[in-house]
Image (cartoon, rainbow, N blue to C red; front, side):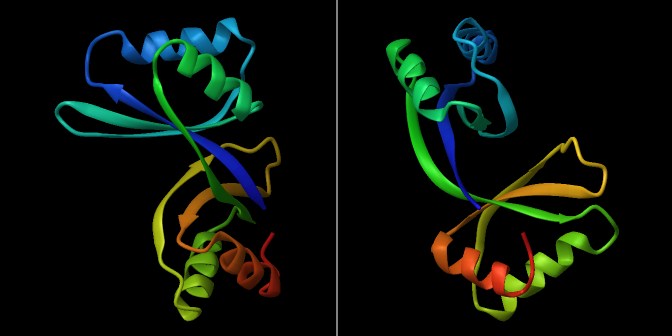
Length: 133
């Protein structure tokens, strides 16, 4: 399934993550999944939220640098080897993964992974054809 992810440029300074999460809280925006990649001076905070357009607007209003990107949310069996099925399917179809991260599901038998690939629609079609949600 294609979903929207927001990416926020975050200076590597005390309080920046606190400020961002407070802005989201004050605007009733629920974080469903997150990932942060950092360097010495800055990080990129990637979020899946309940209202990405609103999150983008309120964060931009607070002078944050924010972008919205389409990513894939993939449901996999929550068992050993579940992720390897997805990775093998993508590899066998010459689809490279730029980055990925997982998030907790309320279902006990399904795990979810967020994937960023060059061609989301092609990857979604390949995974769907292989019986992967």
